[in-house]
Length: 391
Ligand code: FAD
Image 1: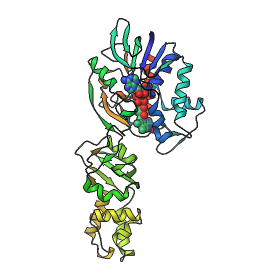
Image 2: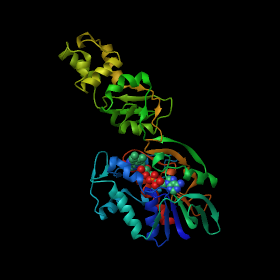
Image 3: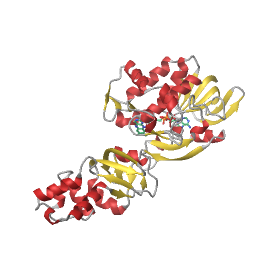
Image 4: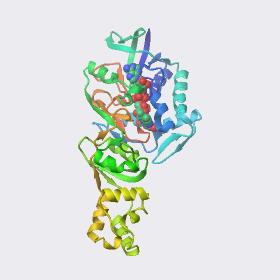
């Protein structure tokens, strides 16, 4: 079988690329090795797919080359995807911080892409394994579990390593290495952080409790909510900082990002001198959280007995809480993979490999990792679109 374009990976970027190429009159085959296409789209956004972010720009991405993503993002804009979902009648809403979610279900986003692919004449084959790829005279030869396939252009859209039991494979990195391309070290990102038992045990009763925080690490900070879990810390603020955290580093948590805690404590000492410190702190958080944290930080006694210096120590403990995570939950639960194929190896305009004409890499397999909030899908749509225009 021979196609103008073969896309390996029927996820977000692969389906976008295939439909775009199909509309340009190319014969397109999409190969998916699992039974189900678009599995991560279905899982995303808690089942409602946070499909883009109205504030999306290059500053929402982590990459060795911070400018690489600009070209694609400017050629396929947030509004282009919004127009697409609106044409298909998908209803959506802005949750917070510019994040757009489906009102009903992520199935609607997958349906939009499948309908587009169908209208564009794209063929999709599932449960098809590509054993290896090699350069042929006029394109690429694919040895597959159902025989040989020849592709004029070959697009690798197999994503990163997160959620291995959902179909993730290192296929893209292997193909890149095969063609002499540099692959940067990868690690799990947008992932919960785990804690050592000395902290985990006292915090265990808080599992399930969420609190607004500002969390910082190495000069980067995020103001969102944090969730205590039975293994450590999660919630949007922690997922965001996990992309910047490296093993051995401490993160700093401010439990009162919007307040002058010291000033407030001084007022409380005057107004409620007989109340103990945990009771006072429980005005700002749940009673249990106030008790556990005061115990953990070793603060007790009535407000009247606390010196200015102690109030300063309390303020520091609650606003600069330094925690050294023991690790992350890893690829098992990570939303994305940091690192990957070096952006030096592909054209920022088309995603074509510099060292192999007709070979393209799109989506998460590249060293372009978005912040939480719809940015990773916007990268998948944009990189898929520009490659689809070029193949
Ligand atoms: P994928 O969408 O992962 O697609 C890759 C496809 O290739 C898969 O179908 C896979 O089975 C297939 N494949 C892999 N190896 C092979 C092989 N060897 N042969 C053939 N096929 C192969 N991002 C957001 O922007 N908003 C969200 O709300 C959001 N929520 C998320 C929730 C979860 C739980 C997870 C895990 C991720 C979430 N993300 C979200 C991230 C987003 O899903 C990814 O960034 C995006 O799907 C990447 O697109 P992709 O096309 O590169 O890869």
